[in-house]
Image 1 (cartoon, protein in one colour):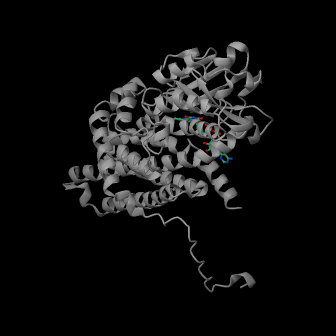
Image 2 (tube, helix red, strand yellow; image 1 turned 90 degrees about the horizontal axis):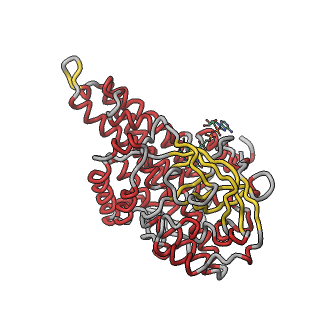
Image 3 (tube, helix red, strand yellow; image 1 turned 90 degrees about the vertical axis):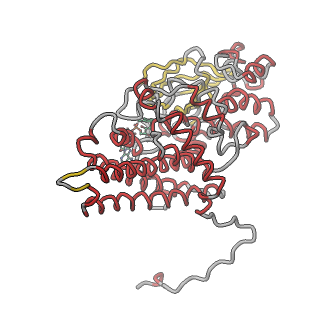
Length: 452
Ligand SMILES: Cc1cc2nc3c(=O)[nH]c(=O)nc-3n(C[C@H](O)[C@H](O)[C@H](O)COP(=O)(O)OP(=O)(O)OC[C@H]3O[C@@H](n4cnc5c(N)ncnc54)[C@H](O)[C@@H]3O)c2cc1C
């Protein structure tokens, strides 16, 4: 043993007077959160399950579903009331995600209905920053034009980072934004603009404050590039676009709120996918798209990468929740199936090897859920969880991969038939190891965060 191998316990530090309370996992089961889970499950069974196959066939979910979810307060969870949200925390988001998946929803449904979850936080941040610097007009413009209508289910938001040349290496993106004119020239807070935003005009087009405004006088930004695999990209009213405003690498990336009705913005292709059929996924082209200065969401035309990295943690936590919740749904369906399906004169569930397999599925789900919930609780208490969200995602995705595979196996031929629910989850869940950061890329980042 070397000098550093002293195994005597280190003295425990005195708790800081103002340290946050230790998150209690039990808070997931408070009466309010149980009611939220029940409300969400009821919404899923009534409004989603009967329609889901139709939306899968059509390749998108209707806007009316966004409005219904908003009326129940589901879209605004974890956003403050002053921006159009209903409050709450990442624990409440976790509760809603779990309830949708375990009561018959799907990963694609969740991705399409909640695509604003990866886009809107960047706009809220920009509005908060504008407010803190006294630029109340820009703050209200961003909130009225995009954030409030999206959280009210009137508009759809998407995030456009990935490009045809590559997605994992975000710092190498090529879409470029070039500044024209000066921001002080920007009269994009006109009465007409704000009135249009207040009405929530989804077709307000070039009259929208963050869409044209000063472009008529040649001031703002001009964006050129292409994006691909964009969730809700075919339906979105606003896409938060990551574009290069500076030199190469992470520090040259900025974010813009781009109105999809602007000239030069085009949905070039709807992409057919292995799964997530009800979630529209698009390839986008931006040719000389002119946006006003107020569309720039990150400070000093940089800072886009940092903003993405900060919010990626929440996206990864959400993907972890989707993964273990999908797995839980598949386990529930499989237990039911093995109770009734007989082979060689006995229900499958009476075979020890089947029961052991179900326990293994349960074990992996429990571990993934317990860890991911603890990370959500720590996040809700203000802790940074960059590393933990990665570990939660990779753990839950591995559990989900195992469980969906075994669920299809135990359903036999039925598990391979289109229309059987576990078949859909099997296809849907493959993307969880790719989107929001592929498993290998997550491991690379985890090693970096661990200092290895
Ligand atoms: C259904 C769907 C929805 C999506 N929604 C959105 C969206 O809304 N917005 C958005 O911006 N993007 C979205 N994406 C894109 C997604 O984030 C990217 O697909 C993902 O980041 C991987 O990028 P890529 O596809 O370019 O793969 P690449 O970067 O080309 O990587 C390919 C594979 O190589 C491996 N790999 C990559 N780098 C390394 C490495 N360093 N070491 C070891 N192995 C490595 C991984 O297995 C990876 O899956 C979506 C994708 C899909 C499929």
